[in-house]
Image (cartoon, rainbow, N blue to C red; front, side):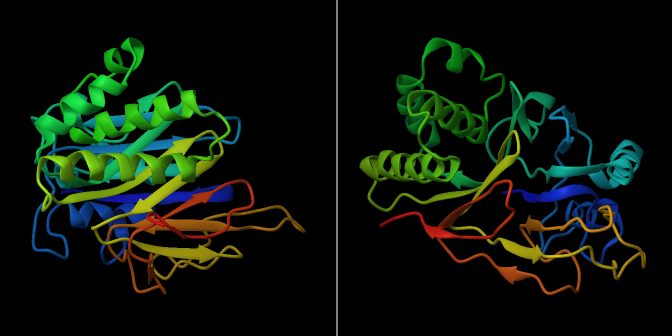
Length: 272
């Protein structure tokens, strides 16, 4: 039960307002989100630069009490950003359990829950080869989902990230329902590999904005991206909650989409 934010854009984009200064910025959600919950059990900020360099900072203190969160968030200017504030439900409050998880240039942040996770975990581990199991450093359901996704990508390199995500959500739901037909599964993820981002909405809230030009921010009054003259700017932002009073729309329920180099929003059903 966490809150997350993701950006994929054609050009480096600043996200300080979305993370710090907006009416419902991620740092504010760490104190009190739309459900009336705090998300105080750690924060993470990850981004990918234009040259493919991946950077991620994770800490266990509340984002609202962290000068480092504020400084780091204000400084980010990248075409791909993943941010997360954690409410610990599975796994202790420790850095290894803080999102986003990073593995060989890939990143993932998760908001959700898997009923009977201790039993589902055993099923996931049965599917993973040794190098994927050994890559799990914490105890969250989220990191197990990440390594299952990574493994399925290795098994099926022709699959898109979107199709891999769809397949794994279907698998996990089936494993949980095999234990109890009433089992509840919720998997909202922002998953990044290189210049591609895959996103799912399954049983948790998720909103998006699709932009076709740099916009003047309603919070700071400035543009957050500066493409060269004649270059076309596109961006897709996603967040667990509406960040500000811009025209955020709900991502359709039970859908998955992939944002690649063309930066388009094209949700498709998870279940056929």
